[in-house]
Image (cartoon, rainbow, N blue to C red; front, side):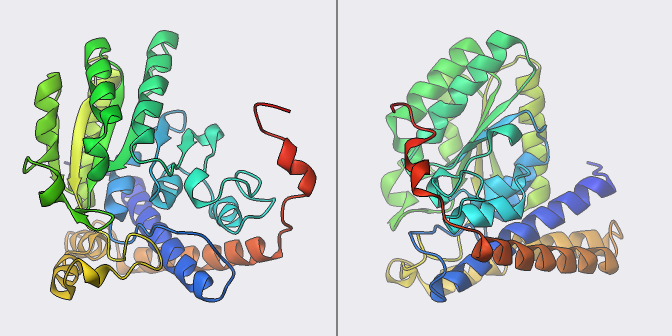
Length: 321
C-alpha cells in the first residue's frame, strides 16, 4: 500500500492533535477551568485518524461519548472545539452542547452522543438520505464494544444490509464498557463476526496501527461508494485512562495491562515506521509537534477569554419556543 506524503502528514498531525487536546483537557480540569465527565480518547487516536483519512468533508460521521478525537479527525478546528468544551459562546455549538453533544454539520460531524449506541442509527439515516439523494456520500458511525450489544446496533445493520446503504460501522473495541470487560459481556471473540448475521463484511484490524485502519477503511469506504452496502469494522484498541476523568481504572484492570498497550502506542509506531522507511523526516514530525502545541495554546487562551452564552440563548436552537 502506497500512502502519499500529504496523507502521512495528515495522519501524524491528526493523531498528535487529538492526544494534545485530550492531555490538555485533563490539565484544565485540575485547574478548575473545565467541568463535567470528560471521556479521554488517548490511546485510540489511530482509529479516528485512519478512518477519517478516507473521507470527504461532505461525508458524515457520528460519534459516541468518547468523541473529541472523531471531531478533530473530521476537520473541526481546535478553537471552536475547546471553546465548546469550556461552555463558551464561541464554541462549535455556542457552548450549549459540551463534550457529549459536540457537532459541526458543515463539516459532516453529526455529533458526539451520551447515549450508548445512538450514533449507529444516526448514520444509518444519514446513509439512507445520501442514497435517496444520489450524492455519493458515505456515513460512518464510531461506537464502543458495549454498544454492539444494543438493539440499535442489530436493527441498523439489518436495515443497512437489506437496502445496501453507504455506511461504515466502526466498533472501537477498547476492551471495556465503562468497567465491564468485553469477555464478560460479549460471547464472541470478535465483534466483527456479528456481521455474518447480516451478510455483510466483518473486518478485524489492529486499532493501534493507523496504517492497518487506513487500509481497511479505504476498502470499506470504496465499497460503500460503489453501492455495495455496509461494512462492520472492528478496531482492537485501548484507552490509557479511565472511563472518564475521575475514574480509577486500576480498580478493574492492572497496571501491567495498561503498560502492555502503551508499549504498542499508535503514535510511536507511526513515527518508527515513517522514519525507518524514510517516508518522512524527523524535521517534518518536529514541525508538526510545534505547530500543534502552538495551536493548542491558542485554542485554550481563546476559550478562556471567550464569553459564556447569553441567557437569551436558552430559547434559541430548540424545537419548541
